Structures are given as structure tokens and as C-alpha cells.
Length: 192
Image (cartoon, rainbow, N blue to C red; front, top):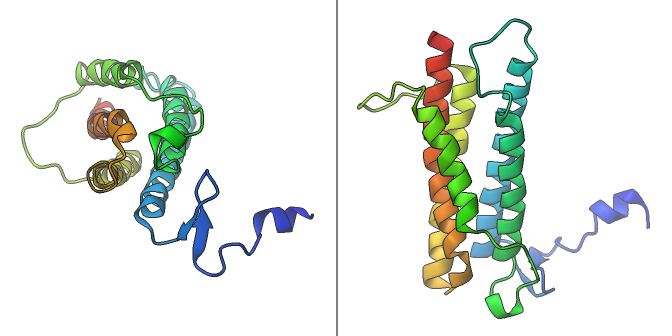
């Protein structure tokens, strides 16, 4: 089988695709819509990660004191999203593949960095208009997609009884809070 055939299998040409357990479902099934939101979030986080890598590569720019760690942190988040995707693609906890669980330790890690950023950020008590900089705008787009992803996970939990996603839902909620603060932090650093 060629590389082309590995990618273009034609298995989804009839509008169906498979879950981890091999079960076929329509491509517009809730689970695939949520998985699409998850993929979109990871892609936008990739843009943000690249933006921080470009900034940390600038000679003499000492303003972004935490930014050298942010690309690694965002990659860690992207890997967590892959784990969450595996749990979404395993609709029943009993039949779930042995995937690493999302834990409160993961949530604590996100909260810790959020607190560090908040200590360096002037958070205004007003509505924020995204676009203070290109990088902060990409962070805000990521936050918006995270909020949509969270709404989809809530629907999976409530309508599909996928209780094994409850910690993942909390993590995505916390991630969107973190991204809100990160965008404000980026703009605060730009002003210094």
C-alpha cells in the first residue's frame, strides 16, 4: 500500500468514519463534531506555539520572561488534547482503550501557570476587544475554539452519558481561562 493509500483510504467517501473501537458512524455525529473542534483547537495552539518560538528567537528581547517556556507548555497541552480525543472517540468508559486519564494534576498545572501570568498582567474589568497584537489575537481565537469544544464535551456528558469526560471538560474550561489571561499577558508585555 502506498503512502497515498494510507492517507486517502476512501473509507469515508460515503459520509461515515470509525471510532477507536471500529464502530462506524456518520461524519456529522456529535462525537466527530467535537473531535473536529478539538483538532481545530490544537491547530490554533500550534500557531500560538510558533508565535512564541519566533519571539523567543529574537535577539535582545527580554520582555517575555515566561515566553521561553510557553512553547513547551503549549505542546504539552496539545498532547493532552490527543488524550482527550481518544476518550471522546471511546464513547463508553467500559470499552475505552487504555488511554492515559486526564487528572486534576493536569488542571493544577494549567492553573499554576495562569496564576504566574496573572501576577504580571493588568486585567481590566471591561470587555476585551481581541487584536491588541497578532499573537494575542491567535490566543483569543484559540480561547474561542476551546469554549466551543467545552460546550460539545458538555453535550457528550449530558446527552450521551459520557461521564468519563467530566475531568476533561473541567480541563478545557480551565484552559480557556488560561488562554484569556495569556492573551492579556501578551498585550501587557507588548506595552512594556
